[in-house]
Image (tube, rainbow, N blue to C red; front, side, top):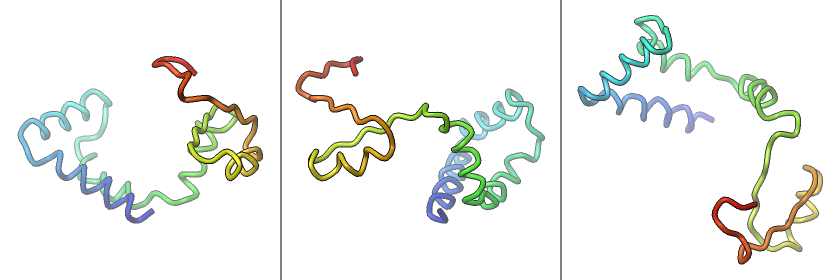
Amino acid sequence: MNNAKRSIIGSFARTLESPEGILGRSLELVQNDLPLNYWDTYPGLIQAVTPADIMRVAKKYLGGGNMQLMVVGERKQIETGLAKYGKVELVDPAKMTIGSR
């Protein structure tokens, strides 16, 4: 989790390296009605995220059976383990086309 936080904060800092990036971040403040010091506090907000926060948000937005999981591998090795997550649907990639399931 610490690596993910460092990555988010680092990529944010890189967006402030150009005039265009600074303008974009300034526009975000206006568009989202954020306080003027929001970007000053952003790294601290990211650092403050806990595993419990992530679970709470995941349950809110991903709970209720609205998630799809796509797994690629040897059927014999993975199918049994996946069954505990719900219905397993096998798809032949040779029969797939863009936009199909």
